[in-house]
Length: 273
Length: 266
Image (cartoon, each protein chain N blue to C red):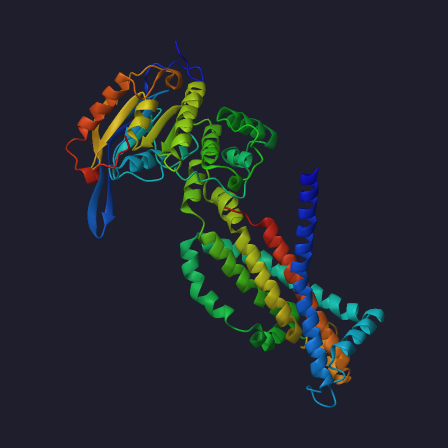
C-alpha cells in the first residue's frame, strides 16, 4: 500500500470538500454570479486539476479554498473541519511568484518558518531540503532579481512546501513561463509530488497540462462558473517517463474535453490545446 | 598572449575613460571657483567688500578657522543638533508613516492635518518654541525635528501604502497576521521610501539649521554667520557658507550611499 509522508494510508478519504460553494460579486450595482454551487472532493494525495476558460471562476474557487476570498454561500471542508481564512496548512503558489525581492532565495523559503517562530538553524535546514527537492540546490543565496522565471517559481513552490501544508494550491503557476520552461516545470512538480505525496489542487486553462498532471480533472463551464464534468484520468504514472502527449489515451481525454466545450463560441474558448 | 594584452589594454583604457568622465565633476567645481574669483576681482560685490568675498580670501579664512579650532567649535554643535533632531524624528515618524500607509482609516484621519502641517515653515513656530522650551538648544532641536518629520512620515506612508497586494496575500497564506504582515512585508518593502524620506529630511534640516541657530544659541554655524557679520569678518562669513555647503553635500552623499546599499531591486 502506498503511504503518505505522515504515514497514513492513501485510502481515498476526502481531504478537501467543496459543498455548494457559490460566489457573487457586485459589479456596477448589479449582482454578478461567478460561481454556482460548486461541488468537488479531493482525496488525500490526489493531484486534481481544475480546467476552464477565462471567466469560469476557477481562480476564484482556488482563492476561496485558500481563504483569500470568502464564498457567498456553501462551505469548504478540509480534513473534516470547516475552513475560513488563509493559513500555512494551505500552501499557495501564485502565477506571479510573489517572492520578496529584498530576500535571497533561501530567505524567501524560510518566511513561513520564521512566522511560525522556528529557530534559525532548523529553518535553514528545512529550507535547503525544500530547495533541493525543487532542483534549486546551489542557488540559495542568490537574489530574486538574479534568477529566471522558472527558478522563481521553483523557489515559490519550495516556500509553500516548507510549511508542510495539507494541500498545495497552485493558481496557473506556469502561465508566465516560456513553453520549454513550462514543460520542465510540469515534470518538476510531478517529481516533487511523487516524493512528498502532498495533495495538489491545480488551476490551469492549458488542457494538455491538466491531462499530463492530474489524477482527476474538474472541467468548468462559464456563465455562471460551475462544474461541467469531473473526469478521472487513468494515464499511467510516473508520467514523466511513461506518458507522451501524442499517445492515443492522452488524445482520447483531450477529445472528450473538446466535446464538452463544443457548445462554446470560438471567442469564449481561450483554452490552450 | 596578444589577447591577454588586449584585455589589459581595454581595462586600462576603461579606467582612463572613467577617470576622464569623473573629472568633469571636479572641473565644474574649479570653473565655479574661477567665475567667483573673477566676479570678486571685478568688484561685482561692491568696492568695499569684493576683496573679502573672494574664494581666495574665504579659503585662507577657512584654513585659519581650522587651525584655531573655531570651525570645530561651531560645526560640532550644529551636527549634534541635526543628528539629535533627526534621530527623534525617525523614531516618531517611521512608525506613524507605516501605520498611515497600511491602515486606510488612519490615512484618512491624518491626511488633511499632515498635508496642512507640512506646508508651514518651522520658523513660524519659533515664538511658540521659545515660549515652551525657552531660548537655547531645545528650541533649535524642536524646530529641526518639526521640519524633519514630514518628509519621513509622507515617504514612509507612501512606501507602505503601495506594497503589492500580492505580497500581502502571499504572507497571509504563509500564516502571517497583521503584525507579521507589517514586520515581514510592509516595513521591509518601505525601506527604500524611508531612506528617500531620510534624505529629504536631512536636506531640509540642514537648510533650516542656519536660521534656527540664529535664535539665541551661542555656538553653531548659524550663530557664527551672525558673529562674523558683527565682527566685519566677511572672509570668515564666506568660509562658513562654504563649510555649510560642504557638510550638507557630505550628509547627502552619505544618504545616497545608504539608499544604494539598502534599496532592493525587482
